[in-house]
Structures are given as structure tokens and as C-alpha cells.
Amino acid sequence: MSKSPFNTPTRRGFIAGTAAMLGAPALAQTTEEPAFDSLRPAPEAEPAVRRNISSFRSVSWEPYFSNLRKGAILVDVTSRALHYWSEDQSVYKLFPSSVPLTDELTKRGRTSIVRKVEGPSWSPTPNMLKRNPEWPAYIPPGPDNPLGTHALYLSWKYYRIHGTHDTRKIGRQSSNGCIGLYNEHIAELFSMTKVGTQVLLI
Image 1 (tube, rainbow, N blue to C red):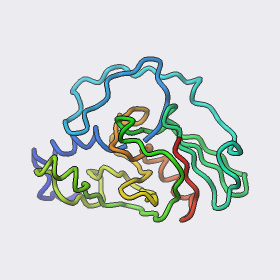
Image 2 (cartoon, rainbow, N blue to C red):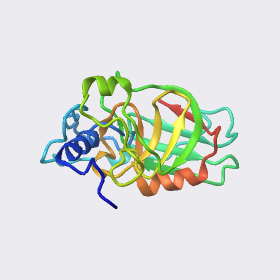
Image 3 (cartoon, rainbow, N blue to C red):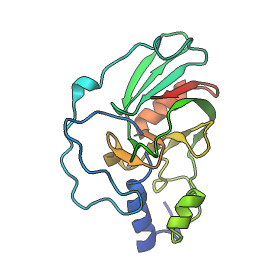
Image 4 (tube, one colour):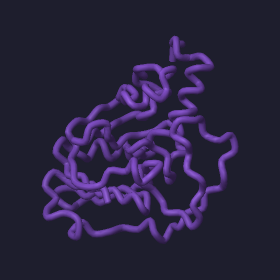
């Protein structure tokens, strides 16, 4: 990748900060580690992550959706898991994910996928720029982009299901509202979903 004006200590600091900021649900933990501060770089030494694998389990779609038209995605913020069912019920997938830092940042309810982007660009929200005026207003697609390799845009403004190049975020409370997956998982989910796929966050 050719060098850009952002390949500087300032950009590296920004990337470290966003590593603790953007993300989605994943595995429940037996002990709750301190949440990342969304406006500061992640701590240098990460605490050991203990996961309660028994809570990361398959579920049926019927309690959550009346039908599977265009497929369905269930995001469980508590267990930090994303479930996907295809319209014909032939495919069911369960992925670990990252979730928002706090309950206040967590949006719950029904929405849908309105746009799919491979190689997304990213811009901080107006509130993010107000708090951090030194941040770049735009990050192009690539290895430094906090949305990873693929993004599914939801009907809620600023909310997405997306990948991440920072795998430390998966299974943690680490975002300002989005749901994050490993890049290989978002690529798989991206290939199966459609514009109009139902999404429910609980």
C-alpha cells in the first residue's frame, strides 16, 4: 500500500483510538473486563478474555421473526453473537461479534439492510469530530479503515454491521453503536445477505 498523508504518528494514534471505538455482539464472558474508552487508545496490555462458551449457542428464528423473507439477522448484544438464517432455511450461521461500549450507545429493535459495500470508506460522525477535531474527516478503503473489508448499512443512520482489521474487538464491548465481525465472517455474511434482509437487535 502506498504511503498516504495519514501514515504519521497522528494517524497511528487515530487508528489505535478507533480500534477501541467501532464494533458489534459476541461471546458472553464469565467476568466483565473494563470497557474501552471510545475516545482514547486501547490499553497497551490487554487483560485475559474469559468466555462462557455455553452462552454462545444456536437459536431458532421463530421467536424473533414472523417469516424469513429475504433472510434474517438476529444480533444478541448480551451474548455478543450474530445469527443469520437464509430465506429458504437451508443456511444458518452463528458468528461472534463486538458490541457497543455502553447500553446508552446500543440501539435495539427492527431494521434492515439498505446498502452493501465491499471495501467501504469511513467518516467519523459529526459528534465524533466535535470531540476529536484532530481526526481525519475521511478514511479510504484499505487496511487502516475501521470498517474492515465489507459493510452492511442499516436503515438506522450511522449504524452498520461491518468487519474489522483489529481482531481484539470481537467478543468485547468496543464500538460506538455498530456491530463488528471478523473480516472473514463479514465477507461470508455479505455474500449471503440482500438489500432488504431483516435485522433485529435485542
